Image (cartoon, rainbow over the protein chains, first blue to last red):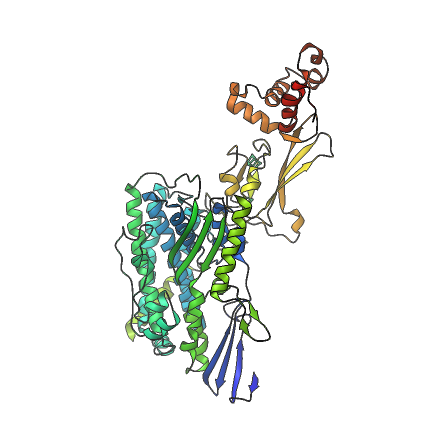
Length: 401
Length: 208
Ligand code: SF4
Ligand code: SF4
C-alpha cells in the first residue's frame, strides 16, 4: 500500500498480474478505511496485434487467428468473423451448418458460464462451488473433444459452413450428457438462490443500474442482470437462433446475485437450444459447407452474442484473399469499464468479487490507442484513424490493381 | 434452510461414494477420443512433398527446405510441433489427402525444443538447363497416376514416369536419343521458363 496524501486515501494495487484470475490487468483501488472510493483501470498488458495478424492471413486462416483471441470464448470470435465475411460476400448458409454453429456456440456458453460460476465461488472463498461447477464443466469439454477434436479451440468454423459434421451415432450420447448436466445446473440454481453464505456475499453488492449499463455501453449477461433486455441472438438473428425456441433471460437488481442468476438461467436456456438443435440434426440433411471461390470487394459486419456479451467484427476486403482491414470489438472492453460504477462505495473485501462479476476476459480488451506521453492526450482521434485506414486502403489498391 | 443443505449433502455423499472425479493421469495413461486433433504425423510414402500444406498452415509451422547442394537434390517437409496449433488444415487440404494425419497423440511435452519435429524427404527433379526446381519426383509420378493419358505433351511427367517404370533412363535422355530426333532440345527436363525459351526462341533462331 502506498500513501496518497492528496485525498487521504490509500491505493491498493491489484495486478498487473491478477493474483487469482492469472491474467494481466491492473486495478488501482483507492480506499478510505474499508471503503473503496476510487478505481483506476489499466489495461494493455497483453496486446498481441491480432487485427494486424489477421490482415496478413487468408480469410480461411484468419479464423484460426481470431479463435486465439480468447481461450474461453474461442468460438465467439470465429462466429462473428464468419458472420462478417459472409455478410461481405453475401453467403447464405446451408441449414445443417446453421444448427451445428448454433450448437457449438451454445455449448461454449455453457462451459464459459460454469467456469465463471466456479471462479465466482472461488473468489467468495467457497471452493466447493468451484470444484463442483468445474466438475460438471468437464462433460461439456468432453462433448467438444468428441465433435470437434479438441477441448478448446474447436476449429469448427469455416467461411460458408463448418469443418466437421456431427455424426448421427454421437447424438444420443450428447443428449445423455446434457440430461445429466441439467440436473447439475438445477442443483447450482438452488444452491445460489438459497445458500445463506452466497446470498450474504452477493445480494446488493456491486449494483449496476440500467442507467449505468446504458451510460457505459455494457453488454451481455451484465446488462441483462440489470434488466436491460439486449441479446444479439434475438435482436439480429443469425445461424439457427430464429429456428429454435428460446427466451432471453433477464433479471432485475444488477447486483452480483442477479448476474449469477442470469448466467445460470442462460445455461439452462442454452441446454434447451442444443437439445432442439440435436433433434433437428437427426432429420435435416444436406451439405455442411459451401465451396467459396472468391470473396468480393466490400465491407461486412458480423456480430455474435458471446458468453460475455456482443462481439463485433468488421471486415473490409478488396477482392484478394486477405482482408485489408479487420476491426474487432470484444465485450469485456466495454464491460470492464463498468467496474468504475460497480466497485465504488463498497468494502474492499467485496471488491474482488465485484471485479470478477463482469466475467472479464482481459485478452479481449487489448486494443491500441496512441497517446502523447507528456501531454497525456490521444494523438489520434477516431476520425484520424478512419482517415489513416482509408489512405492505406487507397495505397494498397494502387499497388494491387 | 434445511432443504438446500440436504440437496448439497446428497451431492457430497454421491461424490464420496463415487470417488474422485479426476483421472489418475499420468499414472494411468489417458486416451484421447477418436478424431482428436493431435500431433500431425506425415506419411513417408504417401506424402509427395508438394508443399501445399505449408501454404495453408496458419501458424507457418511447416517448413519446406530444398537441399540443392546435395546429390541427389532433395526436399524436406518439416512439421515443427512447437509452432503447430493442431488446427488440422494440413490434413484437410493435403494434395494427396493421405500425406499427413492428425493422430491421437497429445503428450508432446519435452525440455528440448529441437526434438519437436518430424518430416519427410523426397528427391527433386530439376531443370536440366538452369537447375530450377520442377517438383519432387513423387509429385510428378502422382500427377501421372492421377491424370493418366492426359499427361499428353508434358515431357517432364512422361519422362519421370517412364524412368520409374524402367522404360528410359537418364542416359537415353541425354545422349543416344539426341541425334535421332529433330528437336532434341525439347526432349529434356525443363522448367517452364526454359521450355518457353526452347519453344519460342530456339525455333526462330532468336536468342535471348
Ligand atoms: S502431400 Fe500433403 S502432406 Fe505432403 S507436402 Fe503435399 S500437402 Fe503436405
Ligand atoms: S495442424 Fe495446423 S498448425 Fe499444425 S502443421 Fe498442420 S496446418 Fe500447421
